[in-house]
Amino acid sequence: MEEERKHHFEFPAESGSFIIKLNNGRLPDVSDDEVYKIGKIISDFLYGFFLEEQQTREHYKNIFLTILKDLSISIQDKDLQSLLRFAKKTFQSGDFESSLFISELVLARLNKIIDRKIENNDRFIDKEIIHLQISTLNFIAYLLSKLEKNTEYGLKLIRIAHNLLKGFDENSMETKEIKASLLDTEGALYIARGQWKKAIEALTKAHQEDLDLLTKGSIDAIGFRVTCSNLGYAMTNLCKEMLDKEGKINIHEIEHTLNKAKVYLMMVKVDKPPVVPENRLKDLELLFALKRMKKGMELCEEVRSKLQKRLI
Image 1: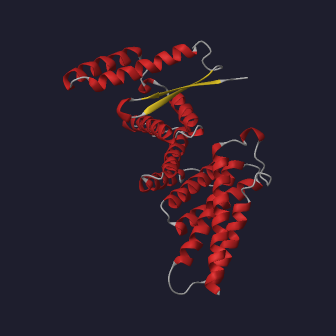
Image 2: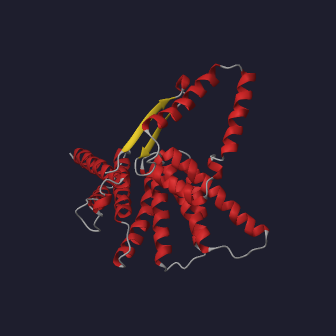
């Protein structure tokens, strides 16, 4: 059985912290003591760095950067696949900030590859490179929705990704999967902005793409649930927004939307198809969808209760 080791270090003056996590199976030759020493060296260096005069700081900074360069362990030296793997790993562990940082490096690398081809008058750019570029744009935008920051920039990235996707066969399964993912991210960004109608519009399209993929036997069971949870949540919040407005309200529209929201929220349950693989039942995205479903259902009942009071 694989065990995980963790060491936590606080930086001076509350400037930050870091956790070193190692799996026995991944780095079997590194002992707990060695890991701790690495962390302590970095921590002690930063403490000393804080206490030095500005002129001396500059000297030590240059030495530190020279050491990193000589060792070639800078993140800039890592290949594209290593960066992609690490971005995915940090996302799965819930470290969205680190995942965003790595993903932006990946995008910069991809843009350089494409720019180099254009400079060399190479009109043929691999389909895989463009697909990876689209996926990375989408991933960065999705991370921004998770972090609830720079959402306008996130929407801009999604628009770019949609335009890039137009160059591919819209009826292919791969294109449909990417399109559904882009629409889902677009909806998540609008949710983060509290723009419920736009969120519903994007997520409804994403859900339609998901249903089409489901009939063809190609569907991400967790992605399907995330879309449903977001769609139901956005609809419920729209109803709350309509109900909170002063003046006349459209009772029929609110009731109809609430009923639809509940249907979507109920689709998130793991005992309903499409079935979630057993090895992904603890997936953070699935847990997020279930949490949002619960919150949406609670809000749904709250809105119904308020609606009943308005009718009395």
